Length: 496
Image 1 (cartoon, helix red, strand yellow):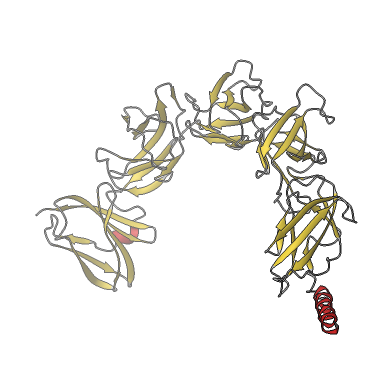
Image 2 (image 1 turned 180 degrees about the vertical axis):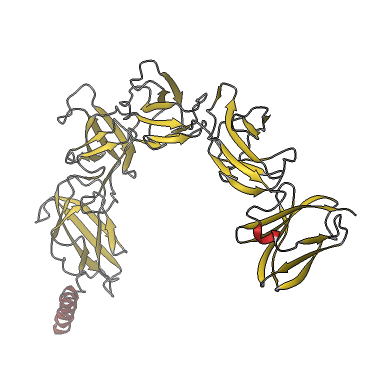
């Protein structure tokens, strides 16, 4: 009897001791106690307990857990919630369980609150001159874009800040998308917008309301206002406007645009056609889509080039070759140029040619027939196309090489001797000078292209130098000697 009683006492002692075995209580990690703006699918997270094989987590809307809405047993150190209500305070706790089903004490009851509103992101409140396809975006209220645990967002857009007008629009966007592109909003209009989140169990409150104003004007860009000397194929440019279908633009000589033609384009860069020389044009543009148009831009004006600007040879330049090269500034949009030159300022019996326009900034024209030595010539140019002709350029003049040097007292006394002429291989130049002098020697063709250019110092008394012409083609050339303003020129024949 005593033995049986002793056995019973031992069994009860073991049971009592086993009942007192406890493992460590898990330390909660996230969400922190009192955290706000949590997602509806917030994850309850805690630190691992070494001896634990599983954990039990509970979630409730009351601190005493008399109304448990989640009671989950898991081998992991976290459990995800789902479809929690918005703007709701929740309490949660967790305990550990080992392999012998020994349990820890419950952790403290921590609380958190789910978010009530999303925060609007872009555009900023009160933003103006926004595109009519403006991107509206929103974010988590705590600053991150990321929002989870929702199925959809509603975006409401209206012309009325109370969202009660017939124009109110309600968009629905997927829960993993935090923006919405607008399409063809009205120009120059104030829009109000707000966003809310929802899932199958609840809907959040609307966000704060923001407003923005769409653009109603845009600026012209090029050519600059009041610019002059523009090409006939000048490019008109203005600011690119997003979210539009077409642009209208007007261009003409009427500053009031009463009799001006309206053109339509799908680009913000155009080349107007049939412009004329020396005309002041006024132009403006506007954008449009299927439902609205902007206001016309502030008008700009520009003037096309009235006449060609001569470049080379410089006015009154002397000592040119007998076939000089004429250069002038390009007027783009021109198809041909009228080149005219004569040995008199009235252009009587002048020579006229019509070279085609090129893409060069400075077109060139080589005089076709050899001019006369020591003669002053006058030249002018005008631009032409199929529907207009410019004014003549200024009249410039140049003088060809003289048969004897200009201001040639120096060379007249130098006893110049050039031989042989005609020459085949080497040209010998002899001078007899009172003192040593540096002489510039230039050998050129009749167009004026320099083939040989060198400076030779001649000693006082009789001295000479030699020029190798053995590699030059047969033909008529000019040899020029220059000392300061003294010039001597002579024809040279190379005969192979």
